[in-house]
Length: 232
Image (cartoon, rainbow, N blue to C red; front, side, top):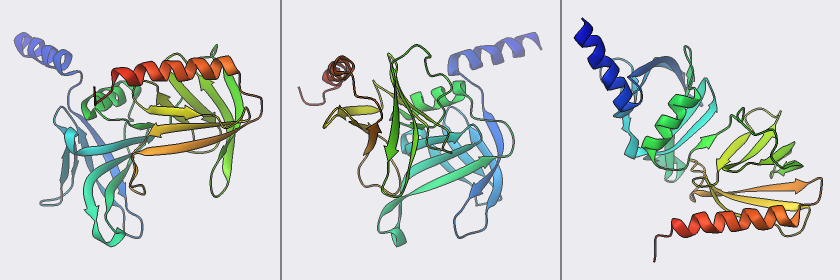
């Protein structure tokens, strides 16, 4: 018994976490929802239902991962949806038990190895530069604050599902300001409605953009992108 406990402890330490299971509902627009078990382990993500109805995705087959909330996630695959003109298929799950906490989320994103979407910004720094902004969208928008941390940019808002955290070394491609009351963030964010992995977030600034803040942010991103260059 003692040997078995020690062995299990070693497995958990080496892998980062043991198998994690959640009771979930798969949300399917225009179709009835489907209940089952979502299993997250070292191999990938699996949605288990009855015989012949399960689906599994190794981490290398996951194109995008969206933590909408601690109890709602979306997995974007490389599967085509023919009737949507080649858009990729996504699977949205609402958890009935447990939650996708920061530890599990970070472990999954490391294994996916691609930029992801995180709509939870609870860990934003309190002493970082902040700008009150309006996020401009084709149909409506939201108001909140852009927060410029050392390793990430945060958009904090009370609007449901609109908050974001973008890691500078992983998620942010570039920033652009046409003038001092506008800022664009070009981020890597895969979505089934897009044919391009780079999404543009446009913000109207309520206070003028500090030139030094903007310059330092551009230089920091330039340095990070120079390290990631694919072509020498």
